[in-house]
Image 1 (cartoon, protein in one colour):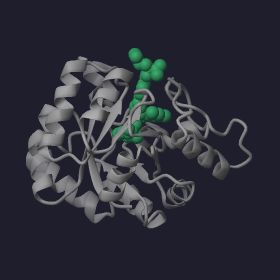
Image 2 (cartoon, helix red, strand yellow; image 1 turned 180 degrees about the vertical axis):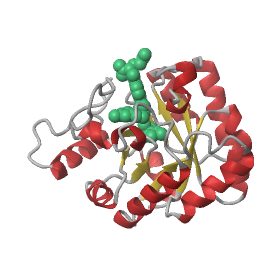
Image 3 (cartoon, protein in one colour; image 1 turned 90 degrees about the vertical axis):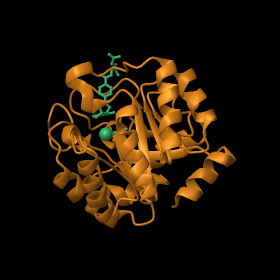
Image 4 (cartoon, rainbow, N blue to C red; image 1 turned 120 degrees about the horizontal axis):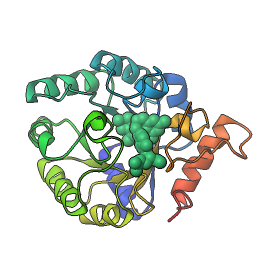
Length: 251
Ligand SMILES: Nc1nc(=O)c2c([nH]1)NC[C@@H]1CN(c3ccc(C(=O)N[C@@H](CCC(=O)O)C(=O)O)cc3)CN21
Ligand SMILES: CC(C)C(=O)C(=O)O
Ligand SMILES: [Mg+2]
């Protein structure tokens, strides 16, 4: 999978399917099910490590998980999260991106809008694909809780600025459906939604939510695809199919 192929899917109106994965085994099955994009999310802090938030996740740990995922799904487009505070300065952000790309990621994802623009711009100059992440920002949970604080107009402006700075993909988390649609239609780069309605170019969910394995509260936007499935593989295929035919998420 290449950036050009992902852009082509958007142009053709074919939805892009993405799931998180954190190890080689699950990355293999996620790719096998037809997900074009795999996210090595810092959500691993919660669903793998057992923490209450993503904040304890370190760059070293992200590198370790990215290496495993890259081995398990060599043909998928692998996006790795820059973890909490590893983008606190431009220099740290560049070092984090270097480590994640050298671990096998094809693209790095940074949370937030205006504060990360210099990093996004420099990475783009250096030829490193970057994904923006707007809306609900789990790395800002201590300050803002699990909610989207920016107004719709600010989210649209931030998306414009990220793409202008060179972002080649956007993730929108818990953004109002109409706003997510506006942002998706405003740019040629793929816009992947989570809890942001059906009108983005693709969808992403956390793997454990899709397999009904999440301990404690599962976000309300998630769906358990193991319900009615006779294997993990068929549940993953059901997710991809539902994203592709537009039955997930519901309007
Ligand atoms: N299992 C899991 N699934 C995820 O989607 C996920 C994680 N973990 N960990 C990292 C981030 C954190 N995410 C979260 C965490 C909490 C809410 C949440 O509490 N949502 C409420 C609505 C919040 C509100 O509007 O106040 C909900 O009911 O879904 C949403 C996304 C998404 N990511
Ligand atoms: C929820 C997704 C978008 C993410 O950033 C993660 O899994 O860490
Ligand atoms: Mg994340």
